[in-house]
Length: 219
Length: 242
Image (tube, rainbow over all chains, first blue to last red; front, top):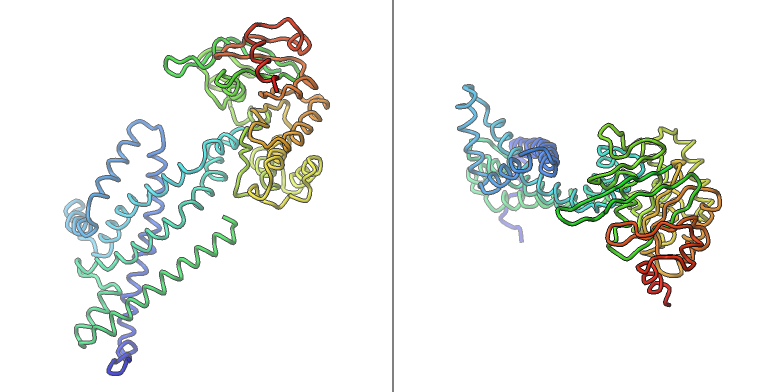
């Protein structure tokens, strides 16, 4: 059924496509890491009793979640040079946009995860003489992370797919490089099939990995 | 050892605890009973600072619980607490549940903590369940692990908040047996419970609460005898009916 298709095109363009893949992976890894770290901070602040902190965080989260990602990307691309007076590479402006954007989503997931742990669990930790921080670290967070892993994974996969939006500021991610090859050599079917297959493999692999992790740590 | 003076607590206008005063001496077993919503659980949770209170004073071995400068983690590590819903940590094995605070709070090394843990599991008749997770244990077994977890800290007193209320009848006995054993060894205990059989067996004093106030605080024989308040009489006749 694949007669007339030219899959050798993938081999010929492998280095170019790999370059796009590297950008996609790098951006995803950095944005997920940064987004998670900022997300934990935001979630803890939102659950805290520090004056105004919960309201400010709620405002931030709602503001960013109401915005299409592509707007955030444009925004930081034009805004950061104006604010800092320096030109910033497209990559970093996009990375900052992704981190700030993803953190808003992650913080809500993490907040729900922390809230899902029963109050009595904290009481039991405190009653044993653990400090608040120790109860958080040894009792609440391990249970919260277990509860939220599937949702965090889903959000991270969405993030991976969303990296393709960086074409708007001239960056070449995986999908964009594939698109360029497809257009230049008029081989859209082969290229788009390949892209779909690669995304499928990555997502499937990631979900298997989480499955394994959860079992290994008896989560 | 544990002393409460005029402890009161309000939620807005609602008075949860009303001027409660009592003393628990070293080695004494005090059973606190009363209708639901009478403030028994709140009172016992105030004793180790898990519940803040509005007015009054609680001291443990002379150290004030409510004082701003009180370092609660240290104080709590010396008072064991057992909860109605066990509150074992579900992501840790039974042994790990008992180990955690020994290592993180008391700073015991792994070997010392393991020896203590095995000793306690043995004593609770749970030696073969050490590596099981809470979800794999019955309610009675979970509560015994919870008691072991509290005892691992070598507490000077134990607080029990309705320890058998969430258990099936056939499991109540195995938990009460452990508690009777503790009482007979001379452990200082405050127990919120409706198990009047247990109270009759080991209590030194009975405290009866109603609407946030301590209505009666009497020696066991006196309480189960004739000299008791009408309110306590009504309550007792209700729970002892069957």
